[in-house]
Length: 260
Image (cartoon, rainbow, N blue to C red; front, side, top):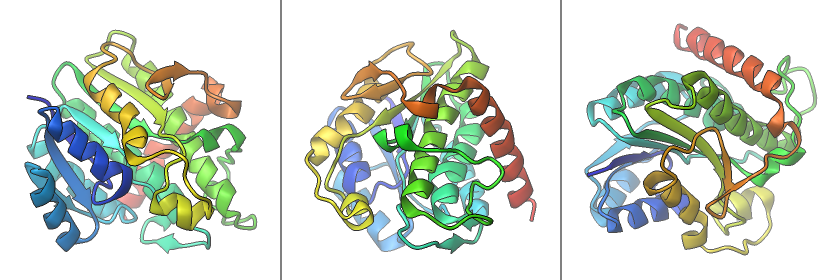
C-alpha cells in the first residue's frame, strides 16, 4: 500500500487530495499547524497519522521530517503554501520564501534518502511562476520594497526549479521521481484572501494532478504538469543555470538557519 505525506492538508486542496488518495486505497499522513484541526482531519479522512508543525520555523520542519521519516512515506506532496499580502517575518524568514520554498526543500532533501525505490516527490507550484523574477541576492525582500505578488510568484518559481534540479541531480533512472504542477485556479482561502479573486476550478480539479502524479506517471521525472499532462514551464522556469544556483543556495540557507 502506498503511503503519502501531504503538507498543508487540513483544508483546501491538501485535504481534498488526502480524501481522494484515501479513497484510492492509499495510507495518508496529514499535516497542519493547528493540533485540533489536524486531529479532526485525521479522523475524518482516516489518515494513519497527523503531524503538527509550523513551516515558518525550520527547526519545526526538521522535527517534522524526522517524524515523517519514521512513518516511511512513499510519496511526499509539498502542498502547503501561503500568500502574504503584507510582509510577515516568520521565525526562519519571510513567510512566502520560508513556507513555500525553504520548508518544502528541507522536507524533500530529508525524505528522499529514506524513500524506497519508486518513491515520489510532488511540488505544488503555480502558473504564477511564469511571471516571476528570482533575485538570489535578495529573495526575501530585505533590500527592495515588498511586493506580495512578486514574493509569492518567486516562491512558486522556486518550487518548479527545485523540482527540476533535484530530478536532474538524482538522474533520469533514479529510484525517486520529482515533479511539479499547477493545480488550477481553485477557490481556496489562499486564492480568495491572497489574490482576492474567485476561483474557477473546484477542489477535485485542483487535487487531480497531485493524485495523478502520486499514482500514475511512472518513471516521469523533472517535469511540470497542468491538468495531469506535461506542460512547458514559462519564463525563468526553463533556466537550468538558475535552478542549479538556487539549489545550492537553498541547501546552504537551510543548513545555516537550522544551525542557529
